[in-house]
Length: 218
Image 1 (cartoon, rainbow, N blue to C red):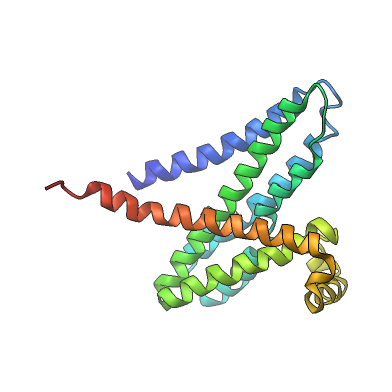
Image 2 (image 1 turned 60 degrees about the horizontal axis):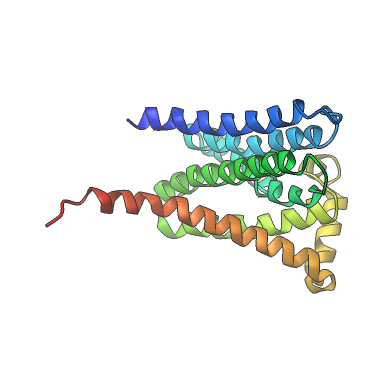
């Protein structure tokens, strides 16, 4: 049963990814440029933390866990970042097409982030206990807010952490010193991170709801 659920989960995520692409490539107004091109790229980036998370829960060597964990955390903000792509929505005859396209992309990004975090959470909790597991979740959600500021408002991406780490760190520290100097960006990042955290809490708690539903009635 667990294998079936895993396949359904993977299939659903691939399907919403595919729907996002299909809505773009069938758009009569320059389908290969806007908004499909950057949405496909952002979806690709959102799948990367899932790959790292799968590796994180399957490897046994501790050294690999550190590398995979760092890679997962570096790319995790790309998942909830897709919610902020809604800023590109505009008026016009194709508004509903784009609403659906952005909606599918945002949903897929949130779910990819949630599922990848659930995998990492369970591995850390198994190895180091419940407190460590939830600490990882809390810190990861907070760092997603920082990642959204860096990506959406400072226009850096995860690859820049490798190619230009000094510039990314300097820009991030400047924001950390005075986060309320840019109230709008900080507020948006905090709101998206809160939404991501609540989405995770909702999915995580479904296990308890399922156990409750299985209890025999008296």
